[in-house]
Length: 175
Ligand SMILES: NC(=O)c1ccc[n+]([C@@H]2O[C@H](COP(=O)([O-])OP(=O)(O)OC[C@H]3O[C@@H](n4cnc5c(N)ncnc54)[C@H](OP(=O)(O)O)[C@@H]3O)[C@@H](O)[C@H]2O)c1
Image 1 (tube, rainbow, N blue to C red):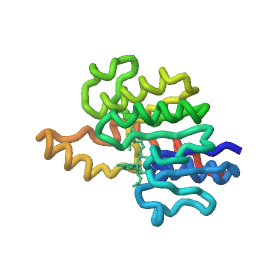
Image 2: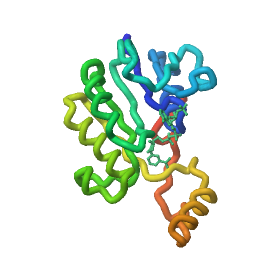
Image 3: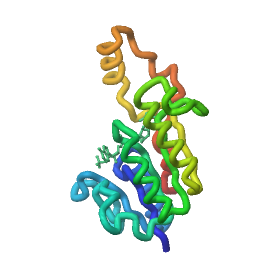
Image 4: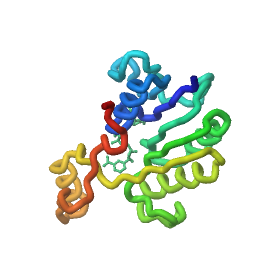
């Protein structure tokens, strides 16, 4: 049985994907910077996010990725390594990456590095699925509004005006 690799297995979405896969009896390896306190289900192999470590991708047949880094630089070796192991990659991209727009022409730094990763994955030869959520209902609206007001001087768009989604829509809940 091949292993499912969850990069960001303790996140809003990753944790739900882990739960769903373990419920289905799959072998799961999930990353966390804090493996001892990750709080993932028994049987999940919790590893640090160092996917360059020897054996980190051994047995991996499919991977779920999200991108917490402020650069697309680490993506090239990661996608290259996945190509040698995995048949399929699911990537949860950032909501502001515009489809069909080249990475360097994306409007923000976040969109640029998410789009760069999308490009790498799409051209890798691995089977891929790219999920592009808008904003999660799990996000704290008051904190976001305060931050936006502080940075821009203008009030944030009310969350109710967005197509807010729930992390469970993307992770799937065990039934
Ligand atoms: N939230 C939204 O509204 C929204 C909207 C559109 C797109 N997205 C995208 O969806 C993805 C998943 O969102 P989410 O809400 O599930 O994420 P999240 O809850 O913020 O989870 C972050 C995950 O990344 C890991 N992580 C954080 N910093 C890391 C680092 N420096 N190195 C390695 N791992 C690190 C965390 O693991 P540990 O802390 O255990 O190490 C955790 O598993 C994000 O990449 C985001 O771009 C989110």
